[in-house]
Amino acid sequence: MSFPSLINCILSPLNLVLSKRSTLLRISEEMASLRKGEESGANFREEINEIRVQILRAQIATQWRLIDHQNDLIQLTPTLKCELCGFQGERNLFREYRSHCIFGGGKLLRHQCPECEAIFGPRKMLDLTADELTLEYEQHYRVYQEGDSTAQELRAFHSLNPSREGTYLNYGAGAWSRSISELRADGWNVFAYEPHESASAGEHVITRAEQLEAMKFDGIFSNNVLEHFRNPV
Image (cartoon, rainbow, N blue to C red; front, top):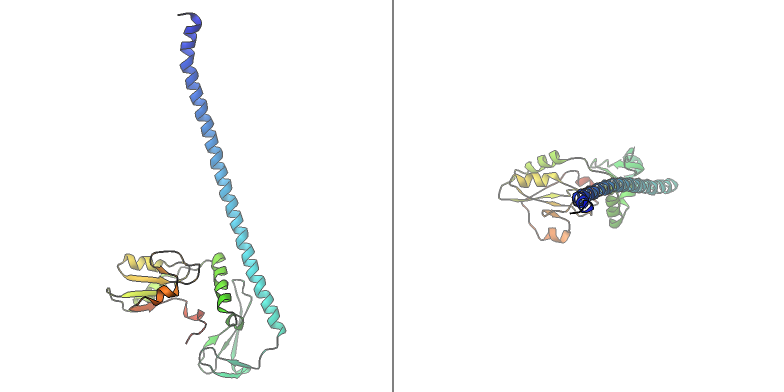
């Protein structure tokens, strides 16, 4: 074997090793670059989502500021009617409760009925159509998170003195409901009903009224729901 051939025999495996190492280094660098790009992309998506939330919150606040301004220009009616018992009388007979919405809803003016003592309002919410109210809830659920009311919901459920053979419903479960998964894990046959788009998907979450009407329950419980009904009676 000639000397050059011998050198080639020695260097060829070495070159192959170096070539593989170079390829591995290049792949490693590219993977690191991809990971960095993914992190940048994730950060970018997070920033975009935060901007979207801020815009929607500003939109909600602006909408209610305009409504409040419009209401300030309208002369108040001399009489009021209770939304619960139907009592109607002079405005000064109804005690006023004034506050401000912490979720961008502007001024809140509620009244207490002198007959049944129910507190109702604000009028600007009661005047919304069903579609407008649905949109209001869905907008808020996109930018504001519900508090964890699992403990209260479980207490409400057990106040029914439930039977293991019964079927039960959490009416108006909200955007999420840990109480359903916890109760079912404990062996209870419980379903959740939430008609708004904010409802989390799940096998035991009912989102359509038609589906609900086809079912029967041995007990119904809820938490922070009754005060949202348009027609409480």
